[in-house]
Image: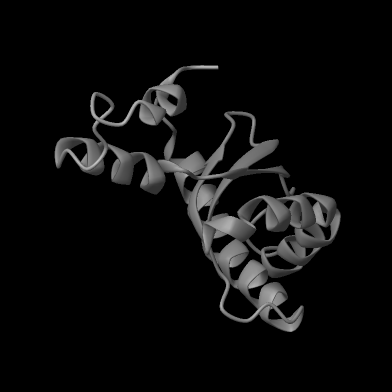
Length: 131
C-alpha cells in the first residue's frame, strides 16, 4: 500500500532529525570514525509506529551499535519529541533495523562480475544456502 503524503512528510521530518540525534550521540559517546545514517523511515497509517532503517559504517560494529540504540530508544524518542514539538502532536514509537541493502547490492555485483563463483569455490555454496 502506498504511503500517504502525511506519512511521507512525518517520515522525512523524523529521518532528518534522527540522523542529527544519532550522529551527535555517537560523537559525544566517543565513537570516532563511525558513520550512522538513517536510510529510510516508514510510518504506519495510524502514525503510531515509525520503522527506522539505519546504515552503519563500518559494518562490523553495526550489531553492537544497534543494541545500544535500541536500549536507548526512550531517550532518543524524547529528544526527537523536543525537536519536533511544533510539527508533531504525538511522537510515534520507534523501531530500529539495520538496512543491509548496500551489502545485498554489492553481493549481486560480485556475482555478476564472477568474483564469487560457487562452482569453483564450494564454500560459497554453504554461504548461499537459505537457513
